Each structure stands twice: as C-alpha cells, then as structure tokens.
Image (cartoon, rainbow, N blue to C red):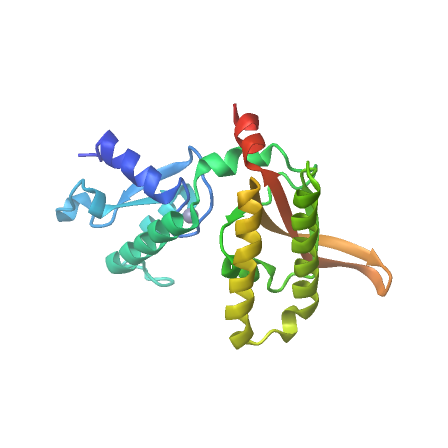
Length: 231
Ligand SMILES: [Zn+2]
C-alpha cells in the first residue's frame, strides 16, 4: 500500500518540502520513502515516512548488500535525519510560503542561490561564518526610523564580517544574542531577513588573478511585499 494522501500531506508540511537528508528545497520533486520497507512489514504511517528528493531517494535505495560500497543508510539513521529536519523546519519557520516569492526578487544571475529566512542571531552568525563579504538587497525604508534600523544592522554585519575569524566561541553566544535584537526590531517594522551564500569571481585591488570567494547575499524585505508578490 502507498501512503495515504493525509500522511503525505502531513509529511510535506513537516519537512517544508525540503529533502530530509540534503535539505534542498524540492517543490514538486519529492518522494515519500518507507523507512522500514513494505516487504519487511513497514507500515504506511507518518512514523515510517521520510520525505526525500529524487537524488537522495535513489541513494538510499541504491545500496546493494551483495556489492557493498560506501556506507549504508540505516533505518535508525533515516529516522534521526527526518526528526532533526522536522524540528529544524518548525523552529526556523522554514516553509515554501517564504521561499517561493523571494525568488522573484532576486537580481539576475543569483536566482538559484538557495535563500534561508533568518529568525535568530546564531543562525545569522553561522551563515556569516566563512563569508568574505556581504551584498545587500533591501527595500527602501519609508521612515527615518526604518532607515536607521537597517543602517545599524548593516554596520553590525560589516563589523562581524571583518571580525569573523577573530571571534571566539565564547563570544558567539553573546553576539548571537545581540543580533536577535536587530532581527526583532526589523521584524517589528515588518522587515524579514533572508540570506544565501554564493561563490563569486572577484578581481582587482590586491587580487591579481580572478578568484572565487564566498559572498553572503543578505535580503531585507518587507513582509507584505513578499506575500503580495506571491499572489
Ligand atoms: Zn536530498
């Protein structure tokens, strides 16, 4: 028996239409896999279901016990991947409503960089870590207060980018905590924050030959515009 429509629906909501193994946003291109196979008595239950992308589904199914190559996905491991990801989706408020419309606002050439909505300071610090620079894309502020919040946030980001490699683990806790304030302030003014990392070819200045550097794209967008552009 296949999974019922209701179970598939619950699983799609729980994973936010992202693969539970590679965490890629998949839209329609998803499959619900039986963790315990049906031939071994696996049930068509939510507990036995894991949403996967086509690639990961093929990987999970491809292991050949008579020709062992690589490390097999165990049932327990699959369950843990799934439970971790469901928890992550819930906590980080990841869902396709926030994902799809933002794509429309991307500048040319960056349409395919996956964006993550940032809702906590630690999440932002993690995204920032290892980036060589940031590019901002923000909606024009309507009041001086809004402009001030965005500008202060950018200043903080510039500081953190410069200091990235010097930040001690113990400092991160406080920095992340302080960043929460910026995120909350922006949220109160109706701004949502999204980030996506992209390798970019840079040249000029001290860089003699073009080199690739990870750049963090930071989007500060008005909530209501995200929704209206979705319609
Ligand atoms: Zn996958």
